Length: 176
Image (cartoon, rainbow, N blue to C red; front, side, top):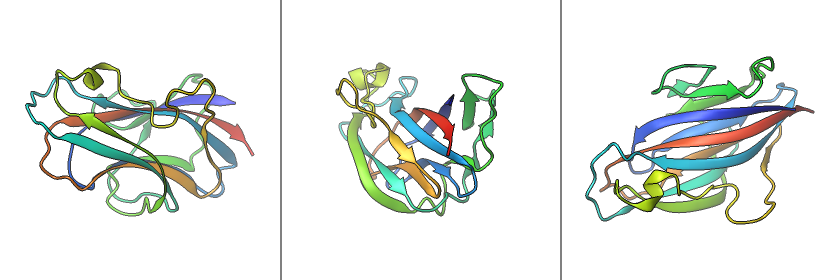
């Protein structure tokens, strides 16, 4: 079993935006177990809004298209990238992610949601945002992505918002 992080850089909040998707395509020969999806609100953007940002973690039934594909072992601070905990284990090519996909990433069942403050002085801004996979359970498990399954995070319909949100996603991959 190999362990990976998906770094999803900061993006401007916007109504109905799909921040990212993670997809395990048929033929990857792998099972993906998503351990955590943690939103991170930027404290470097001055915000004095009163509205929160509602974000939803959902299943997907199709791979994302458009947007920007994640790289492997990228070094950019503004690009989506996979990083392996063991650099000897490359991620199977058919496990993909996209930053702000413009198509695909078809919504499946809702897994969880949270409301975050975009206010830079709010406690959720500095590392206290909830894990969207495992809340407060002692042993909560993970989300399994078998062939042709994925996840995405999408913002709700409220448009009068400002601020930037990124995500830290942790998962492991094992052979089928």
